[in-house]
Length: 537
Image 1 (cartoon, one colour):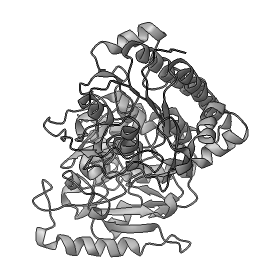
Image 2 (cartoon, rainbow, N blue to C red):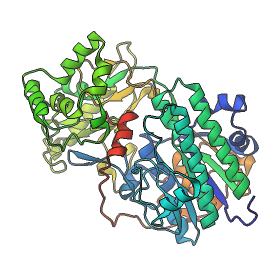
Image 3 (cartoon, helix red, strand yellow):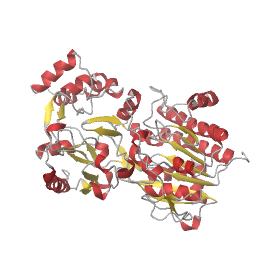
Image 4 (cartoon, one colour):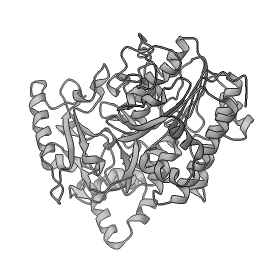
C-alpha cells in the first residue's frame, strides 16, 4: 500500500452492472472485493435515465445533468439528415474532473465513455468508448507512456480473438494497470476507472457464463489491487444501466410509421441502411451510408431496387434458403445500402433516426433542412403520433410501450432541440425497438439481451454514512454525491442531489462548455464496434 497516496474518492464504473448480474456472482463468492463494498458499505438500485444507453448515460452520470443539458442523446449526432458518432465535443456541460479542477483537485480518469478528444484539466485521462483505438489523451503523449509502462493498452478488445472472454478480460486488466500507473504518477485526489467489457459481453454472447465470470473475476482482481495500492478514503461503485433478456418482440417503428402514412421511402439511394441482418466488414468499418462513392455493383443494385428487387426481398429469399448468415458476412455494405428500401428522410413527416434514441423525430419546417411539417401543425402531428403509438399492441395483445410522451417530460435544457420530439419507452424494456423497414411491423428481437432501467450503486468509506442508505438513487445523483465526498459544492444546474449517505456540500455555479464547435469522429474502428454490438442497424 502507498501510505502517501492522496486518493480520497475512487469512482468505479461498471457498465450494465445490476442485481440480475451481480447476485449470482455474490452468491458464489466470485467477486469478494466488489461484494465487500456492498456488504460493508451501503448500496441499492440506481435508476437510469431515458434513454438508458452507454453513450448518453455516462455523460449524464459524470455531469449530473440530463441529455437536454449535456447534449448527448445516443451514439449518433445528427446534422440535418446526416450523422456522425458522438464524441467529447458534444458534451456541453462540465465533467466531474473539470469541476474538481476548478477547486484545485487533481483527477485520473481511465476509460470513461465519450471523453475523446479530451479537454485539458489538472490530471490525466485515457478516453473510453467512442474513442479511436489510438486516441488523443491528456496530457499529450500519455498513451505512449502507459503502453511503455504496462506493456500494452487497448480501448477495444483484440479483433478476431480466439476466446472473446479472454480478450475482454485482458481489456479489464489493462484498465486497472493503467489506473494504478497513472495514480502513482499524478497522485490524484479523485480517480474514475470505467469497465466496459461487462456490458459488451452481453451483446456478444450473453449465454457464455464462463466468459462473463472471467471478466468479473478480472475486474475484482483489479479493484482489489487498486484498493491495496492506493487505499482511497471513499469508494463508489456505479453503473449506467442494467442488463437483461428481451422477452418481448421487435417492433419496427419506421414500418409502423410508413403504414400510418408518415414515412416515405425510396428504393436505392441515400439514407440509413435498413437490412440489419446483412452487414459486413465494409459497414462495420465505418462506410458512412450517407456519404460514399458507389461502385458499379452498387449502382446496379440501386437500379434493381428502383424496379422492386430490394435488399429486403433478397434477404427474405436467403432466409428461406438458410443463407442469410452467409450473406451477412460477405455481402458488400455499399451494395446492401444501395439496394435497400430506405426511409426517405426529407420527404417523410416523422421517422426514427436511430433506435437508441427511443423515440420519433418530426421533420419540422424551419428546423430540418427540408422540413415538411409546418410549425403551426407541429403539436397536432405530435399529438396524433403520441396517440397512435400509445395504442400499439403486440400480436399477443400486450402494449408495446409503457410511456409515450412529449420530449420535454424527459429532457430540459439548451440542447433539447437535438432530441426526438416524442419519447417512446418500451414496456419494461422487454421489446426491441428497431428503425429498420420490413414488410412486417413485428418480429423476434434482433438481440436476446439488452439494456434495462435498473442499474446499481454502492458506497463505502470515511465520507459515507452507511446507515443512511442510498434512498431512491438516480443516475443524476452520482456526480453530486462524488463531489460531496470531496467537500466540493455540486452544480446548481445539476438534475440530481447528493445521496442520503453523504453530507450536502452546498451548491455552486459552473459554466457550460458550449463555446467550442463539435468535431467530427470519422473513425472506422469506432463505427465497426458500434455495428458489431448492434448499436448501428
